[in-house]
Amino acid sequence: MIILQKMWNWLVTEWQWPKAALFCGVILTLLLSAMLPKLGLMYFFIAMTLPMYMVHQFEEHYHNRFCLMLNEKIGKGKVVLTPKDVFWINSLWVWAVDLIAIALAFLVNPLMGLIPAYFMVLNGILHCLQAIRFRSSNPGLFTSLLLFFPIGGYTIYVLSNLPDNCWQYQTVGMGVAVIGHAAILLQAGLRIRSLKRAEG
Image (cartoon, rainbow, N blue to C red; front, side, top):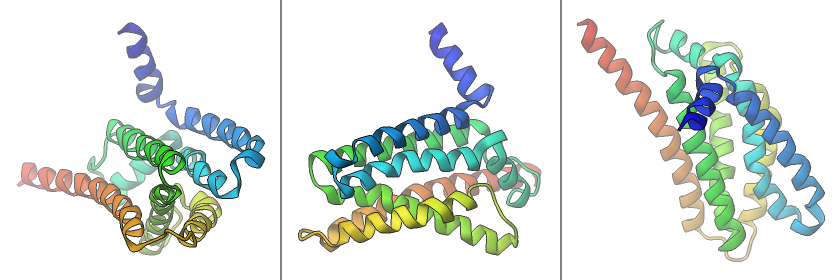
């Protein structure tokens, strides 16, 4: 328990997890690159969705930038998302979902790789919409343009050309991505509503 508490303090209380994500993302990228001849291009890009997301998370959450921006622009200074919310969203909704989807893609059907690929592309679209809405850059926009659209888009293209591709797999991929992001927006919306009720 003491070790777990120390890990939690280091990751969340001291907000070191974005640095850890960047480190893991770089190491995984190097490892996967070394395994490219064995994996093949398709499986390589499916597996790369996770380390690319980790690199993105560093840009997005270093110094808790995204949470602070969201609280300022959406919450008008009120707390819409807490640091703990941000950590659990990124660990459960991104790392866990991506790991499960990648494992299913390798062990069951490569089309399950559509899940993390659509997750990347949808997240990139949301970053672009934020930039348009607020007429300014935002934490995560650069890696969305540089990594998410090329890698996520190419992965979707390759998988969509597989012989057994069908609308069901596409629906599952898009559906999980939409539900994941909708859950985050719903949580923020409910918190704003509760804050308004407390004030009123």
